[in-house]
Length: 295
Image 1 (cartoon, helix red, strand yellow):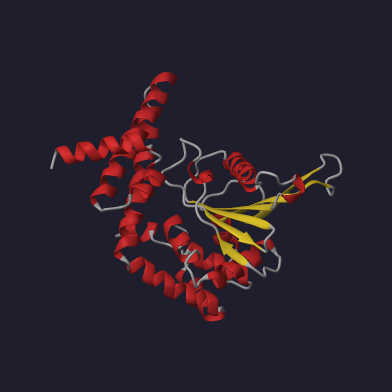
Image 2 (cartoon, rainbow, N blue to C red):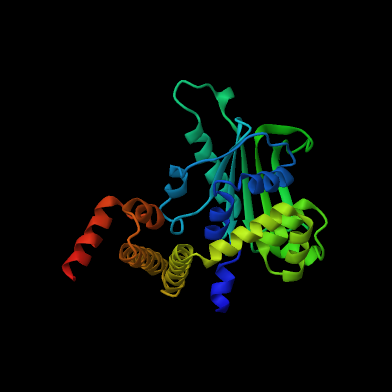
C-alpha cells in the first residue's frame, strides 16, 4: 500500500501527463506554465508524442514527457524525474537538441526555429544553489549579463528544496508545486482552498488514481523502472567493466521483454508497447509468436 501511494502521486509521470494533457484541462497547464515561465500564454496546444521520446535506446521504458506548443512560437517540454539518474543537465541538453532538430521543417530558415523551454521537475537535489526553482540561460563567460544564445532556457525544479523552504504556499507556483509534490497533505489542503484550478486538479487526480486502466499502466511503468534499476545493480556488481556493461544490457533487455509480455496480456496496442519498451517490430513479433506457442 505504501509503495502504491508513493507512485500514485501527481509527480508520477503517468499521473502528471494524464492529468495535465487531458482535453479540458488546458487551463490547469496554462496557469502552471505561466507561473514557471513568467510569460502570458494566449494559446496552448498539447503535442502528440514525437521521436525524441524514444530516440535513445538507453532511456527508461517509455519516457512520458509532456510536450506543449504555446503562443505558436515556442515549445515547452516538461519531464518528471523521481530518481537521480545522473547527468540531468546533459539529458536536458540532449532533449532540447532533438526538439530543435525535429521542429525545423524542410525549406524553413533558422530564424523560424521556435523558442525552446525544457522544464525538469526533480524529486532529488541536483544543483548546489539554494533556490528550489532555477532557470538557466547561455551567457558570456566574462559579461554574465549578456545572453549569447536567446530562445532556449532550462528550468530545474528541485522538490526536496521546495519542501524544506516552503511551509505555507503563498504564490500560485507554490500552490501548484505543493499539489504536484503531494507530500504535505495540510499544505495540499491550503492550496486547494486558495486556488480553484488546483481544486479542479485535485478532483481529476482523484478520478485518475481510481481508474483501473491508469493503475495498471502505472504498475507496468513502475515495474519497468524497478527492473532497470535491478539490472544496473547487477551489472555494477560484476567486478570488471565488461561484465558490468553486459549485465546492464542483458538485464534491461529482459526487463523490456517481461514488460512487453505483461502489456500483451492486458491487450495494450502494439504501437504503445513499442513506445514503452523500445523494442523494435521484429523483436515484438517474436514475443507475440512465443506467447502464441504456449497457449
